[in-house]
Amino acid sequence: MLKPAPVPETLLRVASTFGTPTYVYLENVLIDRISSLKKHLDGLPLQLLYAMKANHAIPLMKRIKQEGLGIDAVSPAELLLAIELGFPVDKILFSANNMTDSEMHFAKQKGAILNVGELSRLEKLGATYPGSDVCVRLNPQIGAGHHKHVITAGTESKFGIPVEQIDQIHSISQKYDLHVRGLHQHIGSGILDTDTLWKAINVMLNASLSFDRLEFINVGGGLGIPYRAGESGIPMDEFASKIVAPLKLFLSNHPSKKLQIWFEPGRFFTAECGVLLATVNTIKETEHITFAGVDSGMNHLVRPAMYGAFHEVVNLSNPDGPLQKYDIVGNICESADFFAKGRMVQQLREGDIVAVLDTGAYGMSMANHYNMRSLPAEVYVPSDSSKPILFRSRSTPESIVKEALSFV
Ligand code: LLP
Image 1 (spheres, helix red, strand yellow):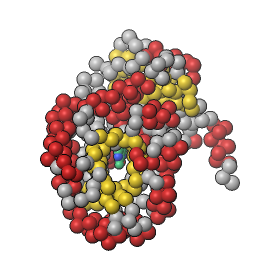
Image 2 (spheres, rainbow, N blue to C red):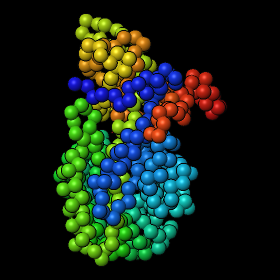
Image 3 (cartoon, protein in one colour):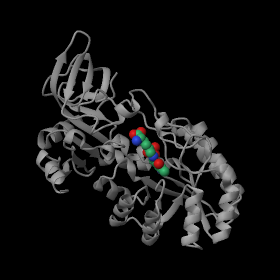
Image 4 (cartoon, rainbow, N blue to C red):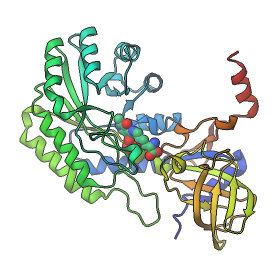
């Protein structure tokens, strides 16, 4: 059984109006995911942030702002864009990894909340800006994720200050009168296992007891989604009983702390609202494999090559065709350039339009011009109208060459 494409007629219309390759984002799915998480976290003193590294498409960001979310920004450009779009700075966490001095000055000057994950940076912040507010990223020494490359806590992780070094956090803070307003963690991405998530959160809750002036605990993002037909994603009933209920209990046991709980998902909000549309250019039969070559590739969606990630591929223009086995490959000169291998898809013919599903997170935001290939167009489908809006045109050979030549 294949996972069905959402709104196939609209997607076909987008392909015929704007061509391919094109990323399409469905506002109604975005809103549904935000509302669903809000509903499941109901009753917590909550602030939701959006980890904009997942997708910084402007229409999505604007809609996310309307929902009252803050932002997790990890680079000066992300911070600048969030401010430019009107996100209030007191809801922007600046979590640059390996932060440089100039990034620290930049974020301080903009008024964002600095999230510091290294003792040496905490020391530099204190020495330069004594008396500052700060959030500290901890490594609870428990990590998780859909692939080892996306695990961001544990003994082998470069992220966060190991929880065993809390005494040093306290002594640096005292030395420079730093006000640790928040504790943060993010243990990995694409997590479906609520037990591990809770264990890590619990480490942080215990750690929080030694901080007197704490205002929030940010438990990170990482919530997984169902990429395959029949998968259920993060089990929300389990999420409520294993994470939300014990969080509420902790808060009620420590009322004087008046803590807010922050979550900062990326994938959970935007993955399922995005579809990458491509056209089949070449069918190539060999003795062993039928290749379907499309006008896109790993430069537009690197997740299959980078993590062996699964994305459903659906033939929109031959939905009732018999299922056949294909390697669906791109046009990049690398053998890792595939969307699916040995995959059953409705019979593919040259000219067919395929939809690569659940590509709204870490799709376009990780895309690049490798092989001097164009970037896809981007289209937004507002929920109150079925009229798709092209908000970013596909780059062209001419625009890419013009940019390359502009550097000489
Ligand atoms: N907060 C921090 C500090 C992060 O580093 C990340 C993601 C998030 C929140 C959001 O995580 P999410 O809720 O989206 O899982 N490129 C990989 C994912 C890398 C995630 C990096 N950090 C992929 O395509 O699976």
